[in-house]
Length: 274
Image (cartoon, rainbow, N blue to C red; front, side, top):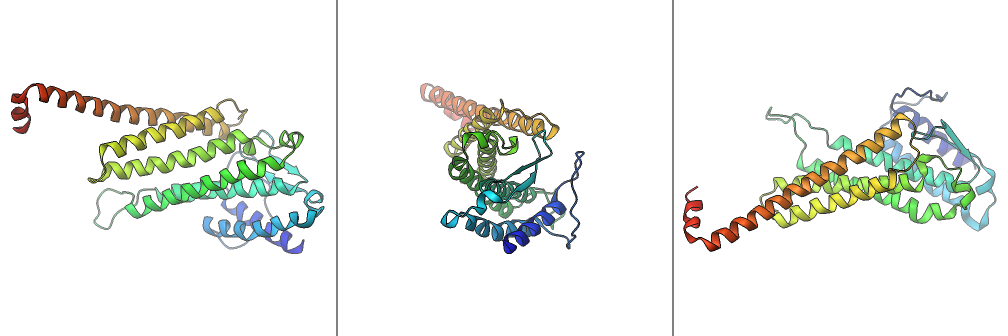
């Protein structure tokens, strides 16, 4: 228990330093460390998780005797405390996923190039962000498939909206959607990517964002953060549909031109002159 407590204290302190400044009051930790990074916090969570899972060995009663408390972001309640180790596992996976999303988005911030041209995102950073988005989706998929089923129905009702199944599924699909979005951008910039590949990615992106919206639209996201999250997903879904329709229109127009050329040989020469 001492090691568990020490590792959790480390996570709490580092998370407090990384948390963005928000209007809601937040409890401050009395312990102060040096400036931590997202990667440091992620590593601290990776160190903590195996020790936490040790509470489930041999049917230990400790999994029900220790109360775990977490601050909420999208729930009306500022904090939720539950005496169940599965709640702690779920919260850790959720935080690891959110850190991964933050890391991926930081990689996508345009940076000034050495040649002095307009700031842009490097190909290397775009590829790395796709891997991190997939990692975030993996954490959330594990939370939904393997951790949530461990909760009895009565305890699920006590979970904050941040950890509701709909929010976790929406975040998972959001991570997948953002990953495909980046892949589509790289395909558009590549001369080797075919139109069929770009259209497939656009359709896949619409599917993920539509499912994300379906999962989050009817949840009670009462505060500003929750509403911003809902609007972000709605915006990305609309944006994805526009992108898909553009590719569909282009393919349809190209098909019409080909049919027209086949029926009018003289049109071939006119187009070749352009």
